[in-house]
Length: 552
Image (cartoon, rainbow, N blue to C red; front, side, top):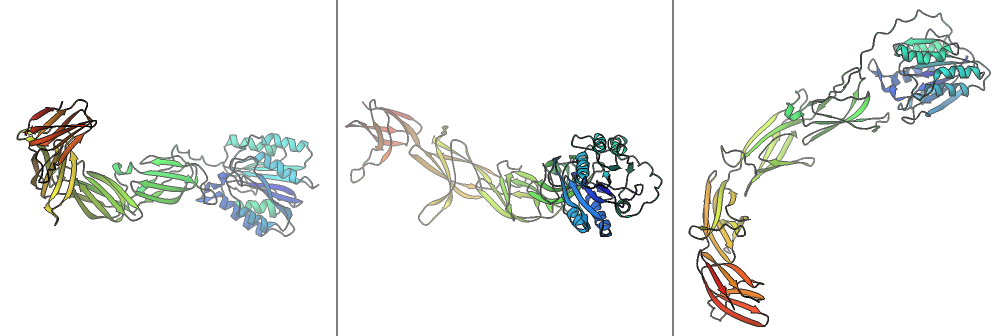
């Protein structure tokens, strides 16, 4: 056979117009750039190339000396990624087929440098060399194939370059046809992949045949779409897309995959009903909607076609409303949470309309001191509606110094206890807060309200009914005792009356020269300490009144 080089590109057309070569050695230069992931008739171009090479090389005569060179198969974006994978020798057909099957397709298209290196690799032979360049793309590495043809001819390398352009425009074809013109070769336009095997047989194995009539000009190619990806989201297999207020929350994240199935590029994110623009090829698609996540692999077609990968969530919608009582408006402070398998957790207040995985989940709802636990079942593609009445009444507690004299300060404590006492007389605390107009949302039942201000404490029993408000007054029967004692270190208030042992109960004390004490109505002993000196005075507190006591 004659010495020649074959550069295989994305698509392959009939090459029967080219002569067969029967002398010397040969090198196949295989285009392993990323564009090989494009498709012809639903199949990746790299698959067509591998299959055709394997079939043709399987019938190659044993004496044929053949080698393999590839570019763009090791590093993305590297114009120097060119390698002589199999040196030319007899009987290399199986090795070339195996090497082609193992190549990655991810790099750029250094056409000019590839032809140069193929010619130089064969320069040691005295026989003629013929270069057959089959490409679907133009030079992408800032080189001039036209100048290369003239350069190689001038160096004395005896070879001819034939160029087959697959799917190239007239302008693109002209940029590589000159390589053939400058070396005495021919340029052929091609537009299909069906005759690849015949083309390889014609150029590598078979005897010369008369050139057929040129193929008709290819039909105009459809224009590329501005956005070629429209993901379709379904809650259940065979169902419909959810309404906009649900779909607007969907997030679709596309991660490009390399030939080894691993991530090989930057993510592209599409939201809701938006469209996306992506290069053709395989992707990992991660879809997130509320508390549902689905990951799958998809293939995006050429930019001239709209790809619509379908995502099935196997999920349903929960429409939940929490009310304090039947017929009442949703309670803004009513809290809910959902727990389920695979660490499912979500929560919110009052109302929700959200997507959850299909299955049985635990629902907890709480309003004030009232709490309920239920089970919720989510069916795929269905909406589960729950109008949940937690069942509470409202208790509003206020403390009073005396009848008609409300405590307006915010520093008094209000606690609600269960009315029922334990064996030791204690009661279980239900809720606790401070200040006037203290509000408690409580399940129906009997309770005791306890108000504390200073060392005055009082309690009032009350009953709560669902959907009703109860205003609870707690009468402290207390007043204010103001003590001024210039130079004092400590002011202490004690009961005026001593017990049988002569001891008095200490009610309160402050480290100050002037102290204000809220106390139940009654008589008190005030003890003032100045350094080592203690002075005592007595005072009487009346409900709803202020008593001022000066201790000289």
